[in-house]
Image (cartoon, rainbow, N blue to C red):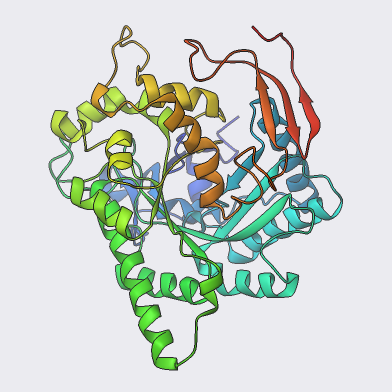
Length: 429
């Protein structure tokens, strides 16, 4: 089957793929093809590509892949939304498709139009906060101006965020660290973009009053990405003052985000995030997969308290912490499982023993990270995330109390705008 057909197999985190010779030939990738900036073509004898491509090198083959139709994307979204509801999710933050893997800006903006059309037809069953790539900041600003605001009138779709990637992933050994990997002394990871170019793009987004979201996993990536956001914001503030007019952004507070923040250098990093009001959007379920791998790739110190998956340290430093799943890549779409992972920190095979127990947080703190804090991070705190006066009646009925249970609850019913949109099996305990 594979001898005459192209094969493209992605690692779960999306930062490394394996392709066959047919796919390499279609993409015209051979021994003479140079590694792109921010990517690696793994090579064998004579420089011949082995088929393993990392980060921006993925774009070389992605460029020849078929693109789903508009109608197929609508179907994908509707099925994904139904799945989200079955897991008790009333709102998702869609980070969009990264351009560094070969997606065009035009296609990425079309994805926003797919959401808009579904909202127009009242066919969005979950609320969506939709992002586009950082390079599409000006196009998104034009879209916002054309639509006259930051959301669809149905309140089921909102937008205003742009995302890009600073580094790769731990599993692919492309996450960017200050010190080399314990498993590879010659490797500190990959910086996907040139820092100056990225800062210019961030400034453009801030000038357009958009929320900037940067993927950052390694400790050096977290430091450099947060420094770029702070520096860009300061430069834009100074430029606005020179122009002698108020920034329209005053009506939309700066709430920029770093996605993942898996590893940090120490307390100084957390203090920078807190002082700059940069949200840390973290993934507790990743911890369960990464625990043993961290020890192998980083060693005990960098895997320990205050350094990796440092949820308690973040909260104690007054960092705004939000929980996400990273679905459909690394982890399942399971906020309830994420709550248990953050509070118990017990990976499979660890016989009930917490991994770095010092970083466990309370159930109340974890619940806030998937409700109120998540809404605040998407500028929807007046709409969702709490059962309060003026908010919409979005809530979930579980079969047991998430604050005291020892096993993951099951979802019995889900309500959006006070209407039941999902009915599961089972009964309340």
